[in-house]
Amino acid sequence: MNTPPAESGLARTGVPPSHWRVRAQQTVTYEVHMMDNVLDPANPALIEAGATVPTDRPRRFVVVDATIHDLYGRELSRYLDHHNCEYRLCVLSASEEAKTMEAVFTVVSGLDSFGISRRHEPVIGIGGGIILDIVGLASSLYRRSTPYVRVPTSLLGLVDAGVGIKTGVNFACHKNRLGSYFASSVALLDRSFLATMDERHISNGLAEILKIALVKDARLFWLLEEYAELLLTERLTGQTLTGDVVATDVFSRAVGGMLEELQPNLWEKQLERLVDYGHSFSPTLEMRALPALLHGEAVTVDMALTTVLAEGRGLVARQERERIFDLMRRLRLPVWHPLLEPELLEHALRETTRHRDGLQRMPIPVGIGGARFVNDVTLAELSDAAGILRELDRARATTSGHRHAPGKPVVTDVDGASDADGTCVIRHDGMSSTWEAITWSSLPPGASCDVPARSGTDTFCFILAGEGELLLDDVPHPLLPGHLIAHRSGTVHRFKNLGTADLSWLVIAVPRPPAAPELSENAPTTECVA
Ligand SMILES: NC(=O)c1ccc[n+]([C@@H]2O[C@H](COP(=O)([O-])OP(=O)(O)OC[C@H]3O[C@@H](n4cnc5c(N)ncnc54)[C@H](O)[C@@H]3O)[C@@H](O)[C@H]2O)c1
Ligand SMILES: [Zn+2]
Image 1 (cartoon, rainbow, N blue to C red):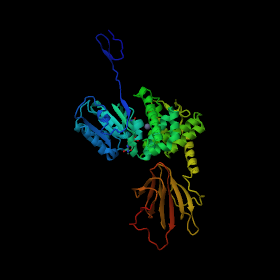
Image 2: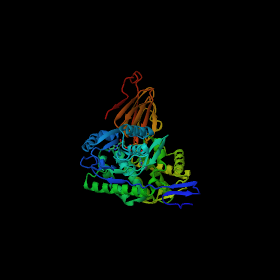
Image 3: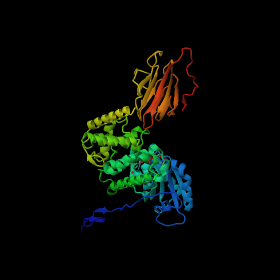
Image 4: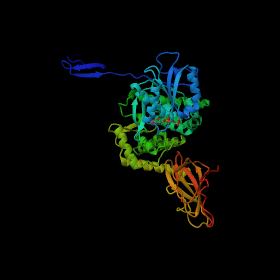
C-alpha cells in the first residue's frame, strides 16, 4: 500500500516497502532586539538571551573581539560577575585574513575545554561582523548545532551581519566560501557601542544602509541625504535630539528593510535577492584589494558601477546618479577603485553567475528606491561602465582640486613616483636637469608606486594628505600627513595608499653639491615633522 505524501512524515512505496521518502520541516525563530545598555548589570537581556532553563549559576562561553575586549572587557566581566556567571572569554582579533577555519577551530577547542551544555548554555559572540561570522559557524558545527547569541558592535554588524542567519569564513582567497545558515537565538543590537568606532568603519556600515535605501527605501535615502554629516559626526548614537530621532529612524528602516528581505528567503532558495545589490563584483574586488578596501567600501564601488550601468540602460536618470554619487562621497565612501579592470570584472561576473546557479540575477537600481534583476550584462557593457566611472571619479577629483595641485605643469619628466599622477610645482633655473624640482604626486586608494632616489640628488618626500605605507627596502613604515622622508640613493622606496582618499605628497629633489657626502647610512629615513 502506498502512503500519500504529507507535509511532514514518512512515505512508503511498495509491498513490502522498498522506497521511502522522509519529509520534515524545521521552524526557525529568532529575536532581533534594539536596546540600550546591553552591558549594564541592571539589564538582564544578555544573561537571559537564549537561556531556556533558569539557573542561579549560569555558564557562558563568550567570544569577544580583541578591540572590544580592550574597550569594554572590564564592563563585560562586571556584568557577568554581577549575574553570578561562570564564564570563559575567548578573545579573537578581527581581520579578513584571520577569518578562517583556524579561528573557528580556536573557538571550538575553547568550547570543548570549557565544556558546555548542549542546549542550555548559549555561546555569546560580541564584536563586528567578522567575529559574529566565526562564532556563528563554530556554533553551527559544534555538536552539529549549539545555540548562540549575537551582540554586534560595529555599524555593519548592527544593520547586516548581526541580523541574518548566515555564518562563514574565507577560504582559498574566496570571501565567505565556507559557511552555514544558522540563526542565533537572539541578536541584541546596542548602538551605544558605536561611540568608540572609528569614522571609517561608520562609513563602512553606512554603505549597507545605503544599499537598502537604493533598492527599496527612497525615504531612507532621503534621510541619509539630509543628515549624512550629522549621522557621521554622532556615529548614529543620538547625541542631540535631532541626531537621536534620525538615527533611530535610520536603524529601524535599515534593520527592518533587511529583515523584510531575509525572512521569506532565509535559506536563499530564491537566488534573486535585493540584498545582493552591491555584492556582484565586490566579493572579488574586496579580496583582491585586501587590506585596502573594507567590505562596505567594496560594496559601494560595486553600487557605483551598477548605477552607471543602470544609467546606460535608461533606468537611472543622470540627476539621480549625481545624487547617489554625491551621497556616497558625503558618506566618505569610494566610488571607484583602480582594480576595476576588465580582467577582474570578467572573473567577478563568472564567479557571481556560478554562485547564483548559472544566471546573473543581478540587481540593478531603477531610479532611487527601486531595483530590477537582469541576466544579460555583457563584459563590454561592464568595461564601458567602469571606464565611465573612472572618468567621473577623475573629473570630480580634478574639479574638487583633490588630485591635481594648483598650477600648470611646467615639465612632465620630473622626478616623482613612476606610476603616480604628478605635477611640477616649482623648478627654478639653477637646477641642472628637469627632475631637480619640487613636484606634486598623488596615488589613488589601493595603488602603489616606486619612488626612485637618484644619485647626485637628495630627495625628500613630504606627505600632504592620505594614509599609506612606505616600503623601504621591503620594510614597512606608516605614512601620514606631515611625515618627511629622506631618500638615500640606492634604496628602493615604494609608496602604497592604504586609505580611502588619495595619498599625496611633495617630492623635493635638490642637487647635492659635488663635495657633499651622501645622506648617512644612519640618518633617519622617515621623520615626523608635523
Ligand atoms: N553573515 C552575514 O550575513 C554578513 C553580512 C554582512 C557582512 N558580513 C561580514 O562581516 C564582516 C565585516 O564586518 P565589520 O565591518 O563589522 O568588520 P570587523 O568585524 O572587522 O569590525 C571592524 C573593526 O572594528 C572593530 N570594532 C568593532 N566594534 C567596535 C567598536 N564598537 N568600537 C571600536 N572598534 C570596534 C573591530 O575590532 C574591527 O577592527 C565581513 O567579513 C563580512 O563578510 C557578514
Ligand atoms: Zn555586505
